[in-house]
Image (cartoon, rainbow, N blue to C red; front, top):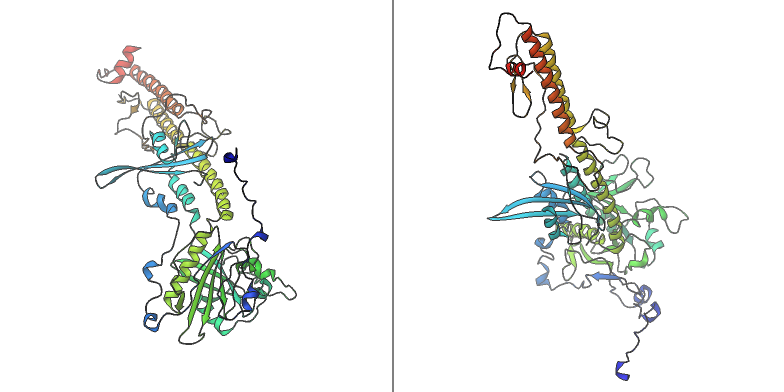
Amino acid sequence: MDEQRCPFPPPLKTEEDYIPYPSVHEVLGRRSPFPLILLPQFGGYWIEGTNHEPKDPIEADQPTCPASHIKLETNSTAKLYRKHFMGKEHFNYYTMDAALGHLVFSVKYDVIGDQEHLRLMLRYNITLNTIQSCLTLVCEEVNVDRFYPVLYPKASRLIVTFDEHVISNNFKFGVIYQKFGQTSEEELFGNMEESPAFVEFLEFLGKKIELHDFKGFRGGLDVAHGQTGTESVYTNFHNKEIMFHVSTKLPYTEGDSQQLQRKRHIGNDIVAIVFQEENTPFVPDMIQSNFLHAYVVVQVENACSDNVTYKVSVTARDDVPFFGPALPDPAIFKKGPELREFLFTKLINAEYACYKAEKFAKLEERTRSALLETLYEELHINSQSMMGLGGDEDKLENGGGGGGGGFFESFKRVIRSRSQSMDAMGLSNKKSNTVSTSHSGSFTNNPAESPKTTGISLIIPGKSPTRKKSGPFSSRRSSAIGIENIQEVQERSAQKAADSSLLSQEHRSDNSPNHSSPEFFATKNR
């Protein structure tokens, strides 16, 4: 029995059980230099770039971060449809799965080298060929009976808009000014003056712009009534617009210790820059915000001189994955284009990485689900409209109001107009008309005597359905009804044309009928 006993697991630790990190006040009581960033007492963040000791003079001239290592991290999946499918021959399908919800599936035949491939792309809610056999290669959980082909010509535009909704060319970042000894949110947002070193850094970030009537990306700032200040800092980086929410340029409210007018914008950013003029550590939980997930801390040395350098450290919440480019060792930059390229790339990559944190991942999942449902409905409605099949309230023979009706309704209108033209010719002209009959039962007038009519050329891939369809759309009219109506109109037109030809024969007295013409056989059969 003793051998079968096992100890109970230890109880979960509380905050009192952890050995807290030293507070910022304890660190400031020690001898400088101080680190740029301190972890909160109970953690929750990670830090990159803790070494800021300069290299030997011999190594100082070497580049701190090679340009080849600086790369914007984007969602490459979002552009796959535009790259491999859009504008090329492929097929799109849509369906509903009981477990996975709305599904939109793209299939394309590819030849790469001398090998044949099928390129598959499945869109569904959960973030994690026959069509069915191809689909299981992508997602084994899918369990549906059939997929419905997308027949809407502009479907690619809808699909690529859905795929690329996660890509943005507009960004907004906070810029917080931290003076020496400032260790609280109220002190950070209470700064009103801008030191020469801070002004120099803002000029390095971008161009100072007047907000009134500003035409570029405004980042949520008021450009009409001046309620968010009169000026800001803006730049364009690799065709991406960036607006900075600078704490000292946002409105200052007397008597408001929290400065909510400033925190309202910076607190709703996802990434922020903290500029330190002197050596005072920044603690990420100084600022209470549900949105701010990453900070890039920059500390200046030798400000307003020919040898300006910046120390850089980065911190983010634990559920934010690491993002590049990696900081050099030591993390010290000279002021110049290299730092600008590194800093902006780091900021943009930081925002994309923050979207993978739990809070933003759940929000993205809900957004994706809603957009996918909208895409499904748009593809379904437009595909049905192309076939002349309206919604449940639009099941009239002529296919819905507004003069629409799709391909088949347009086709029927053309056939009717041609039949009416032939009837009018048979009754008004006493001369014989030569009419040839094809094996499909359609009629073609003699080109020399045909009136000019407008036609519609239709190219319908595959065979039109001729049996009742099952599945979630069985209540909708089959496209075969359109074909049957066309044939019915053609048969009535043939009968009228034959009758009019017989009437023309009875009025003749001198001329005998041409035995090679269809009128002879029509008379004989009667």
